[in-house]
Image: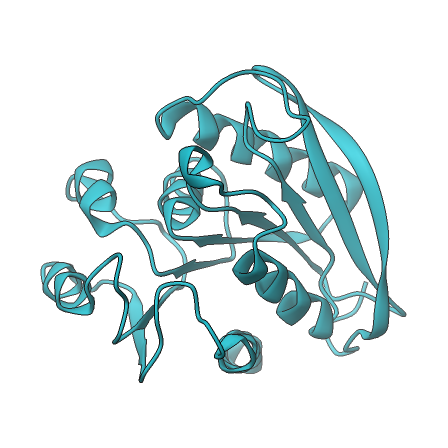
Length: 222
């Protein structure tokens, strides 16, 4: 693998199943054409009880952003979603699912460093997973901070962490996120995007560009 080649064109896509703690997990591997960076990404989708799936448009946008950087991506359905076995696990079971997906990705790409990304409920899951597996970078988009506060309990992931939030988020108020952010030390990097709603209606390109710029800056420092 290399740290300089950026993926171009439509990625190769492979539908697969991953062995999870509650049974098989339905998943999709998206691998850019050409040489790959020495990273592998796993993306966690929104709340299973509110129609969240790995096909969510924000999840798709995050996957596209990572593919454009030359990073293979695993996105998957949490237990009980789509063709995945099991039933809703109140965030705890879903974290175990994310860890299973991450371990699969690292086995598929030996020597790769792990990037965890998540949207909304999936941001909480990605954060929790990052505290249980070696993670190079964490990105949480419009995270459910009411859940995060209880999960962190004074701890934080030991990796660079970006929080992306829209100032017009109608599900998780931006002020709530800023107040939560100010309680953390040193805390993650916070990027507030103007005129952006929870589901990034009409602003998915901005999200993709923000994620791409973040990782380019991170890798430029290493």
